[in-house]
Length: 420
Image 1 (tube, helix red, strand yellow):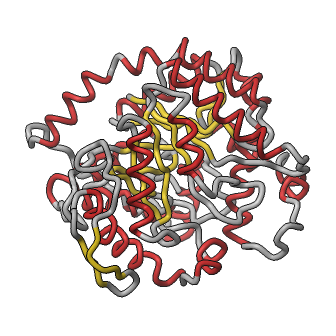
Image 2 (cartoon, one colour):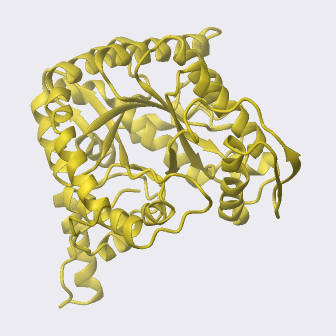
């Protein structure tokens, strides 16, 4: 299993004149530390206008700076919004970053959050999936073709040779954002890596991992000509401390992340520059749902986190991406957490990589046949931004059982579920 770190560049109010500069500098220092500790990936989002939740509107600039302070860690766009960026500019920026980093770029592609981000760019939500698919077709050939033109519904440009070209050939590995659980199936069919949030249970993880690889091996239908990138990565709230209690106390930023995601999904933006999410969050942070969220992520002592990771490793999740920079989590606590995890937890799972690679090679070659596990319960009960809270397996099973009983007293209890 490989490990990444994840950056939204969260910045709760109140802000000082130096807040954003300090945020970026501390994030760069954390990535430099992670590089030295042996972490595999650093992922950076792209969002626009989402005050406090994400001040990461120019990820290519930040990752360019990170490329000069690191040597081995791979630098991931998690993701570039194809809906708000012209394909030519995407190819130019990604290629330049790949050259500057010595060929360490991972290219995640996504659609953007919704009207909050899309409308200022003149993009309608109803067209975002079609625009994204066309964007893939209009972008990927630019990495290799020396004279390429495109004419589509959303993008058109005359024949040109986009320069520079990336160091990785034919281009960096491709990923797709899976904020909607259904997109994991699509990612397999498209032959792209799947970037999603943590599965509610190991059983759900196994079901979706199997579905992903079955689609990739049996129903492959790439959007255009690119190499397959067979990988599933899941993002999880994270804080590693000597004791579970200390970790929970220091991981409050994870609940702020959840609150903001829900807020923008429900309310959009009503007062740009005026809304104080940190103030609004104070009433919610002590609720039962907020506290449940702290038990659902990779938050705890090394022993606690090892136990959770073993279950996901057994489900053949390829990569776990640790979200530590959230809310008002301090730079010192983030660095200490990264160091403790790298020392006490990561080696066990890095040692599994050879065995996992052999399993994956067997699956891709058709030598290992995967069981098509049911994901219908996951479809039915995956939450749809209802406070964006992940329940524990026990709570989830109880909730599902209650719903089944209400709908049909003799219905079977479905137990497989999925991430957001």
